[in-house]
Length: 111
Length: 112
Image 1 (tube, each protein chain N blue to C red):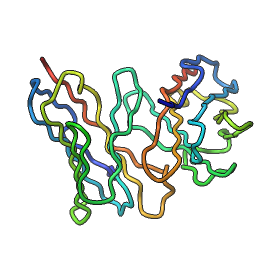
Image 2 (cartoon, helix red, strand yellow):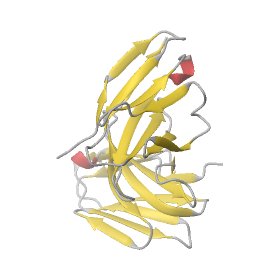
Image 3 (cartoon, rainbow over the protein chains, first blue to last red):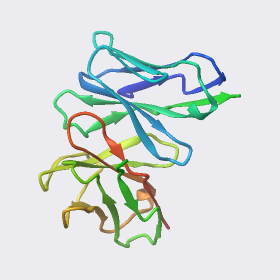
């Protein structure tokens, strides 16, 4: 069983749509990361959360520790948002780099 | 903006050969990591490094792997005797605190 599950696996949206990507995890965590992986393979860190909500531009990330669930929202989506979005968790007691990664959600935004 | 760099971008090697993957973390960062991603699969943690020693390693990071910070800037991953299953993208990352990790662009390793 995967410790980090993401849904959906693939998502196609029209430009301007509101997008939600979900992440559920089964282990106790001290932090959760949302990452963006570009088609060329490069990875960019978007957020690190341990509670509540964070916002950066058109991106919003929320986490519910009790429900072991996090969501990444993209408002007013744009074709340049097309990428793989990866949820990763740091399990409680693990070193800060010891992350357990989800398989990713491939987002394609059509103009 | 400062960034993590990795060399080479691509490497092809024969099975059984040694490879060294190089990373230059952001200069004031203290924590360093290696991850790998086999084609089509999820990213996996290999090792974390702090204060010139390994702070944690995964089951993947067996005796054929080693890491080193030979000088004040480079952070290397050595694979002593490569296997076919070592073919993957290898990412280096660094950070200075418990917040954002900065990833390098990756080295794509192909073992033939």
